[in-house]
Length: 357
Image (cartoon, rainbow, N blue to C red; front, side, top):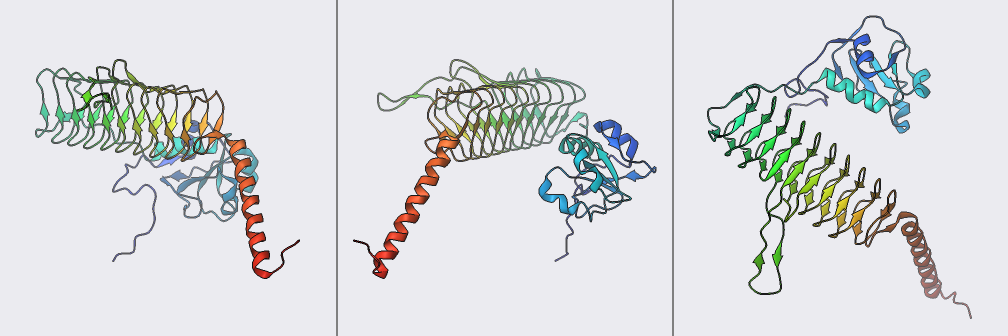
């Protein structure tokens, strides 16, 4: 088998925005260059693999040792690390190097623009209003009275249900489906995601169960991203709302009537039961599970694999199942470990015959 060298920005998959001059990159990301000899930068790479025509960065001090030996042409660094940049490497100095890296990487490897036009194999209802700049891939299905704003991209086999409204610069990945939903601008629904299906609502007081009609919508506000194979149920009698700028990882389940504030972050395999409210800037670690009808305060952080069964105050850090304030949880873990160590020591003394009267 052919030996494959690790590479960032493989041109087979990622468009090339370079070469770019150091001065242009510095101006675009808001950094100060340590010097400028007119060199051109073609791509990005990690510190240990970067070459003289590539840009790298240092944000985590754990990797500071790699900086001394890097061959990168340009490195984005914090002012505190600027003096450690090797001679001959340009330092782009700014307070948030990771942000600078993100901006520079987007310049050197920009998202491909939409290719205006509808593939002849797509199925489009005659009443749909699709801006002329939109790209629609093969076998996509777009229903009646759908509205898609400028510069959108609809991937192959995606299904956009009747009445869905989408703003400008929206992207829908392959095999994703969207129904009963209104999308703002710059929303990205990744491949395989499901948005707008029935919520999990039924009357359980009699058999057989009686399904409750789900009459709400899903609102995805501006700059929301919905990860691959995630699901967002529409509301029952009110809308399910995902606040502007929120990021939803892959394989996340959001129940009906859930409301997320601005810039919430949900890591992989999070599950949120119906009618729970997350205020702005809430962060949920992977596999965290939330019961229904809860209120999670602004800026709260819930650790991975936590089970949340009660309301959480603003700014709280929670951990465990059932979740509790993280300091209390860790204190309990420490006590339990001391108990286990003591128990093991007493058992060992008993086995060795060193019991005390």
